Image (cartoon, rainbow, N blue to C red; front, side, top):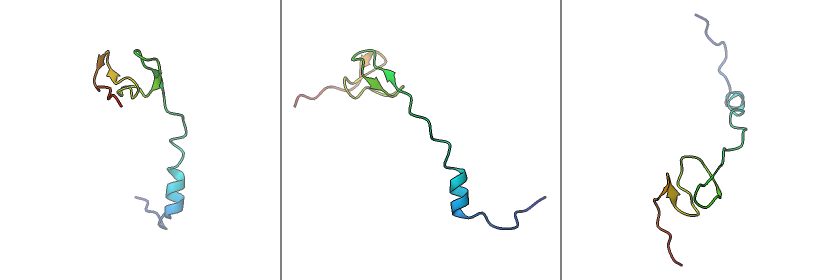
Length: 60
């Protein structure tokens, strides 16, 4: 079984792992208020998820 002759440095290791998250996050339109939100997450604007209200809006 082959073994590495030298230890891989942190810079070389981290540089190899740095390229996987270059794409922009996916956003979908909220069916209630039509603002952009992350999929499978409660809408921050209206508080709805899956067609029903999960978070109550607080009157300021």
